[in-house]
Length: 326
Image (cartoon, rainbow, N blue to C red):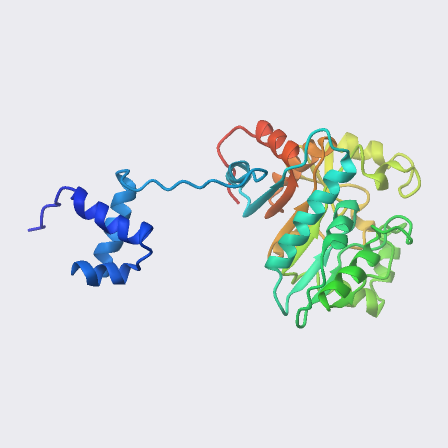
C-alpha cells in the first residue's frame, strides 16, 4: 500500500530554503546537516517554490528588456532574442550601430573553435564586424554565403565583410569570387565549375552558424537601385507577394517561400541550406523593416534575432497569439 503523502512542513521548507538560498550551502551540505537525503532536499526546494515560501525575483538593470525578449522567443519560436535599448528619437544609423554591437557580443560569446561561420552582407552586419574586438580562435572558417552585390569598394560588400571578420577571429576566409546575381542559369552553372567558387559553395551545407540581415522589399537597395536587377523585377516580386528576403531568398507575409526569376541566377546560400545550419542569427531592426522581420520570423529559418526595442515591441503587436513552434 502506498504511503500517504504528508502535508507540507512549513518549518522544514523554510529551513532548507534559508540554508540553500540565503546561506549558500549546497544541497548535499544541507542533507548532511539535517540528516536527510539529497533527493529529499531537492524535492523540498521545489515544494517551497511551488507553495510560495520561496519567491525568486529577477531585477535586470535599467536598459535591459528580458521580458520583451522572452515574449519574442515564445511567440516566434526563437532559440534566443536580444533587444537593444535604442531610443525612439535616435537616428537609424545609431540604432544600426547598437544592434551591430549586440551582435558582435553575441558572436564573441557563442562562436567556438573549429566552427564554420557563414556571413551575408549589409549595413547591420557591417556594424557587427566593425564592433567586434580581436578574438583569435583555432581552426575557424568564415564563408561568404552570397556572391558580390553592390559596389565592391563598399564597406558592406560581402567579400570585404568576410575578410574583416576572419581577420578579427584569426580565421580562414573562404570567399565566393563571383557575382551574387548573374544573367542566366547557364552563366551560374558555368561559374560553379570554378574551383574557388566550388570551395565556398561546398561549405554552405555544413555551416555551424550564419549571420544574416533581413531585407525589406521597399528599402533593399539591391531591389530598388534600378541597376542591379533587370527592369520590372521589383514589380514581379510585389505581384508574387514577397515582403522580405534573406540573402535574396524571398518570403511572403506568412513566411512562405516565394519563387522568383532570380532563383536560378543567384550564386549563394539557399533556403534549405539556411535551415540545415546549426543556427541562423538575424541582425536587423528599424520601423521600415517590421513587416519584413515579422515575415522572416514566420519562415522557420531564423533561430536568433538581434533587434532594437521599438522593432521588438512592434513585432509583439503583430503576433499577439500563442507561440508558433519550430
